[in-house]
Image (cartoon, rainbow, N blue to C red; front, side):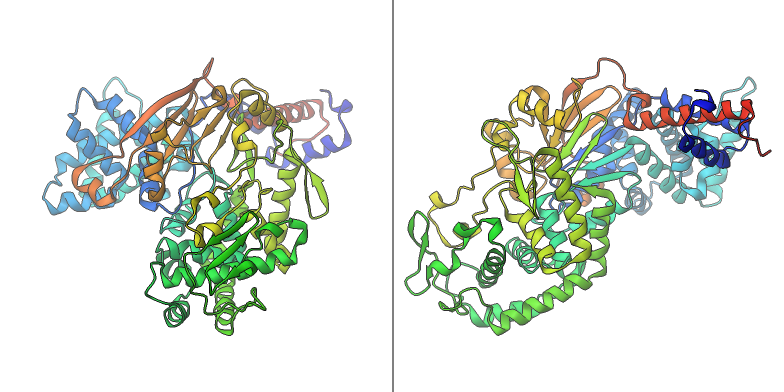
Length: 633
């Protein structure tokens, strides 16, 4: 395009671009560099979902790159190393510090072993780096050893073997200077960094398992990651914003699963006064835990107040705490009366059923202060907003945790929220926008918005009627089923998934919906790949509480330049077991889809951006040659 035919806005943009590329030579060099990049294979994307605080299993899968590292080790060394030695090498890559400590302790650390191991690790790193530019690999290297690693990885053979001697001397020096351990840390970090180019977490990092805060710390250190919010994640967002119903739900989830670590040690949420209050006020002779009974009462009071504040939520049928007879132990539901499993309600006032007792109010005020002022929690929630969203579209895939509100006929159901009636993608965008505003503003109505996302059938991360009251107080399981949005049946139909994908601008035969939220019950014959391959649910039960029903212990989806495959993982014992036995997580791989041709960076979303940059640089080069913009040599 001749510069004279360009808009004034584009001309100004080229003048700004000229500041970064002030000469023709600099511009041509960048064009050549970008053209080379778009012709490399796309990097590997990994997808994980519903981690639910299971830090050790998550960390191990992160370290072994969902088994990709073991696959590469077997590919390179199956003829030169036995199975035991290959497993040892893998464990060293996964946990270098711990493995080296064990080798030193048993006296197996020798100079010969060290140099042989370094050569093997360098060979593996060289293989993994082959799909990246040298510049990107160099940037991925730990700074302290960047020059040495760059030299060792990009060696070219020469006639007189001078390079071999030179590199052998480098390895000698690493050992002689006592730098071997630090160099191993740098090299194994690089291997893991190159094995996975980008990580997607498709919701529900929090609750049930004890160490969600450790997962968040690890994700914040990751080189390239995004998060799609799950219902348990927005619950913690609401708690961090000061929402009392969210705070009490968070406490209740952790009380029920006996998770004190994340509350007290992870985020500094004091439980002392609550434990004392429950012990002093609730009976100990019933089967229910006093802490659970105390938190249930506080929860239904808090949620009742929120329902009364928001008649527009239309949750009148869930206002049940004023419909109990604590003396007779009877609850009146819309379809009749049911016997309750407790009559222990020491703070219940029939005339004011949704008011807190003075002790409850003081405990809740202290909790609210703790959540609002926990530095670690606020830092983690900020990460949710800087690296997360309600949904994400990337490289032909649509990722979200739950679903879109739908009617039974497969049409998108309109939802009215904060004065706007929207459906489909527009509704998802509105919810994402509101979450960001409400978290920063934190007025009472903003806090209640997060509770809406946690509990409401119209919430895109929940999509069902929550029956906490029935499940807490009524043993008759006929009252327990939680009606779901029609989406959770319809998403098993190919035409419905194609309609959803089209709504988000994805019409390629290789496009997929990737989500979690509803555990895949493999033990009952369920499968994660549905709707003719258009929908992939990767909630496979990382949480130990789900593993009996799912039959496995989590999924990882892998999307590389050749296609998509899914790994089903089996229960992980612990890191100590890995170190002592070199055991890995057992996984079963299923190929979901092969690409018709290898996917290059130019075929990805980032590739389209790079092509636009090439076009702009080409315009700049023409402007230099026409004399419309002057070079600054």
